[in-house]
Amino acid sequence: MAAYEYTATDQNGNKISGIYDGIDSVAALRRDLAKMGDTLLKARRKKSGVSKYVRITPDEIVTFTYKLAEMCSAGLPIIRCLETLEEQTRNRSFRRLLSEIRQSVATGSSLRDAFGKHGNIFSNFFLGMLEAGETSGRLSETLQASAIYLEKQADFRHKVKSAFAYPIIVGIMCFLVVGFLVIFVVPVFSKMYRQMHVPLPGPTQALITLSTTVRNGWWVILLIIIATSLLLRLLWKKTNLKTRWDSFKLKMPVLARCYRLAVASGFIRTFAMLASAGVSLVKALEVAGAVVDNAKITEITGQLQKSIQKGNTVTDSLKQSGIFPPVIIQLAASGEESGTLSDMLDKGADFLDKDINRMLKSLLVKIEPTMTIILGLIVGFILMSVYLPMFDYMSHIE
Image: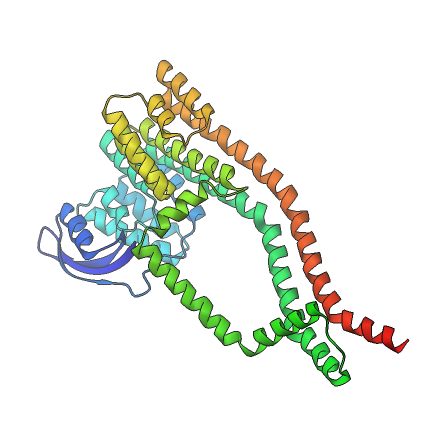
């Protein structure tokens, strides 16, 4: 997806301009503008491919959604709500964003279309809930539900980041320590051993060769890294590499079960929220698949939609997919029988989140000491390789 700067004319012939995010071509931009009654005159893809609103955080989106829900429930007109929130926000990027959204709504755009112009800021779930709220006339309720969902999502991300903070810090420290020893310490001993004409054992020779390569050929290594990154990026866009990677994530060693649960939780919670807001089951499945952002899950979503359209129950469709845990299937069956499908699936997502938290804690208990041991072994190998010739030399002197 990319961001495009565009100029168009509205239904009254007035020129309008702005930035439209979350599309992949000018044709898509022209089509989306036409839906709103605007005619595209010219468009230019932003060079960076990144929105000017990149400094808007998920937490700010959550706070904004809560406030908008409260103001809508108080009966304030949507333009007034957006104007008030625009004045209250301290984030300049967010203020500009709200200004553009307010202007779009003022010129006749629906909320879904106005927010949809910034698809890299507002998720498919949020846009789907907006559309459902506008259509059903329950905007404040759907916004409140959206805020709760987005807050749970943000909390989960914070927990994952906090959980992996220590291993990441240890990994960085390991890299820095090894880099310092290889670049600065090893050359000193290498020079000393050359002057002393000390025979070098295999590990020491390998370490000195590595040190020399890194110090003298760092630019070659850097070029290789850049070239590899560009090649992977190209292959990611032009081939089915992303599909293969997404499939691998569902099967990768150690982390696969945790990732599958996270995918299932995000999918089920999104589906449940949209269904409870009055969105059709087929549309809710489509949005849920897009929110998860996994090519394999998108493929499974298509199969689920076809199954529902054929008249199968949600329970049978989920069971056939093979991606959802038994507890979700059981809760879905119970929900369909009692007429509380959305509530039961939401409870199922909560259960999966708790299971994920337990798995992360268990995994970290194993990762932290493992990384510490690995760091100790690496540093120990370097020090042993550096001092081994010295010990041999001293033994010969004795």
